[in-house]
Length: 110
Image 1: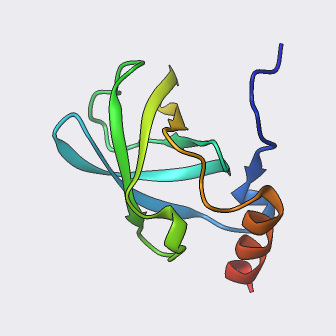
Image 2: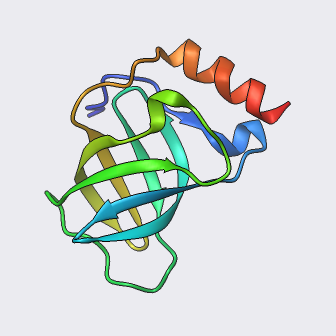
């Protein structure tokens, strides 16, 4: 059963490889955004450190190689963990619709 409230946008479909800085478990880490929606994101942590546990709270601090104002200091809770990926459920939906996110990603892709 699908539980998501929003459609996911796969960044690879835009030719984007977007890294971001996240803060969780008391430290900053670099993650790769795999997909995003106004309500959350799937991220990849490939730094070799321990994966967060489900329920851990964190903050998406900012994009490393892109700037979108609504993707700065976004609080989230880890919804699931699988291998080196985890799902982040944003505490408050982003200030962007799915179509707005798609337009912004298209602009970033050039």
